[in-house]
Image (cartoon, rainbow, N blue to C red):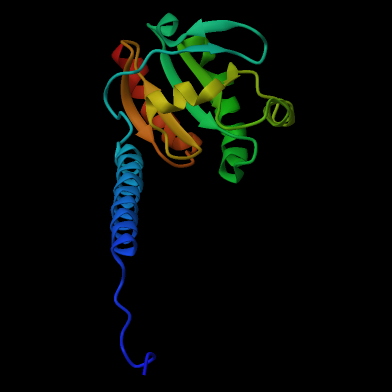
Length: 186
């Protein structure tokens, strides 16, 4: 007969079940909040106009400069990585652009994103890259520009304002079409 009657929880079992429910609910709320904050941060869009965030970059050659030091020149700021397949297609295009325009107030700056120093240096050597390049130590620069992947390219005018944002591989023709009018304005 004892097996037929339902067992009634004792008082201590009810209390521990109540505390467990509260802890479970609190944990779910904390995890949900953290995930929500991360998603909100990911939904922030890149700056596509207005003043370009200033940054300091130490190149792989050991030179240090700030973006603001380049005022008066058009800057093509490219975020790349050695493991990025489209970046490999872009590298010769950016080098060609640099060689063609460097005496016309155009500077190409490469920022190696989430890459090893060895991988970056091998990439630079493989593509004979001569324009300034440096690592994004601690992803400080990419965080300022809120990049979501590589390659991403920002074109900054002589006044230090972002005038174009390209969130994908870019062609030489596209870059020419952007840069020529900027140089004609000055």
